[in-house]
Length: 187
Image 1 (tube, one colour):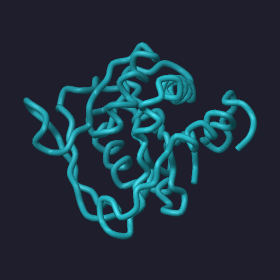
Image 2 (image 1 turned 45 degrees about the vertical axis):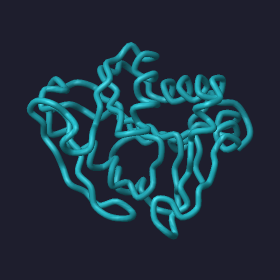
Image 3 (image 1 turned 120 degrees about the horizontal axis):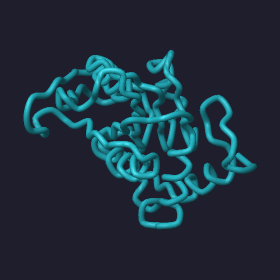
């Protein structure tokens, strides 16, 4: 994709930022199971200038006020926390079951190579809070859809779902129908 990082077309940030992300990804074949090509973002995170550009780009795709950024375990924590600071919003971790103290609410869902369960603390969001869900990769959409449903159960509003990378051939965007979805790079 050529151009600048100023525009968003069909929920995808255009231009130089996408090129930067592409140049900092590493493919890891057969991880975590045979047949899956894992998109490793570690080289991007290790490059402070690229990491800063990604945080600024992801923070900038959502207009209007944001009360909280919900980062999905685990790479959504890495991206979501600095985005929350950039947006003057709180950060809420969406974790695997059994990892949060206190009262929690959870949801089970299917992913591309099995099933999983995530949860949030039951008092993590105020009713009507404007929440942005952040994760690194949109694959089949199961994790993101589950996170959105969980947040909406608390009475909060998911105003956007933001990803670093979308694997479009897996069709995950369809599971997020009705919600604004933004990605930096689509492959």
